[in-house]
Length: 194
Image (cartoon, rainbow, N blue to C red; front, side, top):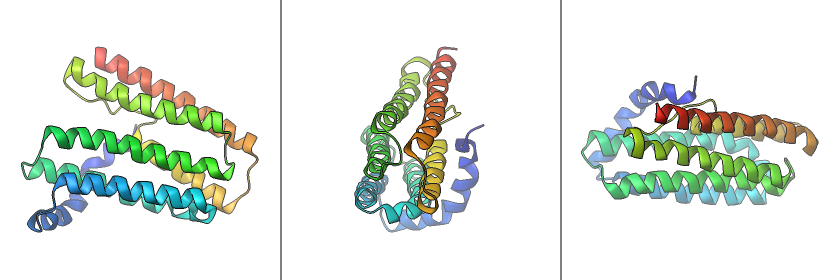
């Protein structure tokens, strides 16, 4: 089970806003690039100020909404382009990497453990994309897909805002997440091949 499976219900809520944005001639690529820029700015602010960790869950929710909006604008109003598909994948990786790395400034987790988490997160997205060349279908399998990682990092940020954890304790939490990421990668590869 992955949060990605809740996407259709989420899109239904966003549809009126998507229709309005289309009427205002807002393009999917504009939403995609703007979302990435906003993500990088927010990540830098979190890097500078630990107090902003409390806003990470809200920001992830906003980003998920914007990511859904650009896709809906593209698909429902015939604005899909190869450039848009590339931007969508690339900017997601850039935005996630920036936000994950912002945690390094606050000694929440050891840098080597965090870097492994970032590497495996990006590798899982690459595995999902690579499936396109084999099965003509991108893989979004969990247990730690993009939406699930957003929930995980949101919980880490919230808990770290309200409580003080030893770095070693948080390392164990990220060890578990890294194991789930390895399972996610294996699952995406296996399902693509089958």
